[in-house]
Length: 379
Image 1: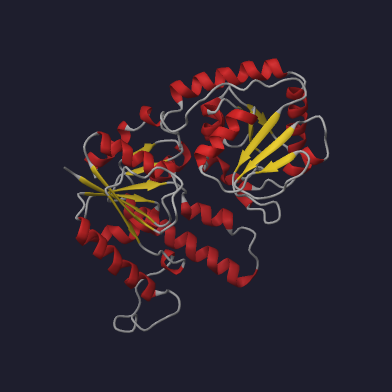
Image 2: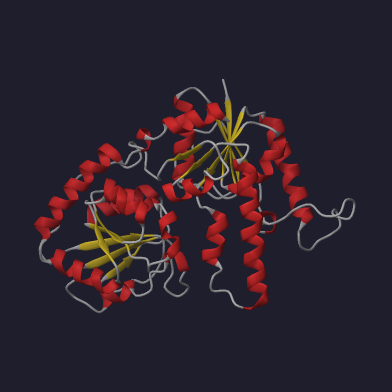
């Protein structure tokens, strides 16, 4: 029986990792996980064993330094963080003795590569370019240097991994980048498994009673460039004819027209969507990085029977859904659309049913999972 070790630089609260493990287990592979400890909200019984290892921020840019000096050097390029992580990875690998490593994101892959074990990189985030997007607002010399280090270091790591290992990623745009140096690149969008979301019944929208949903920990007070939802709450607080908003992932606001449920297990979020909501929102402000994004939430909305309204520049999403979604350029267009559906509930219900049927047939992990097994054979 082959042993697959899933390595991650973060926790296990990620449906994509669990879905990968379930795929391998179905064909008889034994599944193991190693990553940072976070209490999982998903069913992780698929794993034979889980090992926990701390992954510092310094380790994400660390590299070796002057021999003999590096064990005492505490500053950039943080060689002690690299040494510590390599030591603990070795302990885990020596104990499990995996046949294949499935590395989730480049940080885990970079530290696993020297062990010479067949490996597949699952690139969830495209970190080398993500760093440019994340730090584009930084000012001053320190900010510019931080961006340069991350972009250069992570681009180098992507190439060194891709030249030796197959890569699985989430969008065609990221795949095209990796194909410059990697011979075997596969695209698997963030579809849920067909058994992940239990559909308990269709909750019809009625006149003047439309309810929208947004799942995500994004804060209005601290907008993130790629997922900037500034202005979303005002649509609901300042207009009485756009319905209500349900937010999952944050504790506030809680107003007459907005209800926030905090960080809850996904199964509870899916239940709330099906019982209360009719529209799923992706209202991020437009950003050049969006063509590389494939957020889980849009497919979760569809499997819960919600109609999608999304910003138009998320091309991976819009090409998947089109014509079963509405695309907007601005929050004002979003407000107008919500106003329309609040007075046209039957049209909205018909669209939701069409989306649900399409999602059940097409937006499922099982239609794509053969690519994982193919990547394992090529590793």
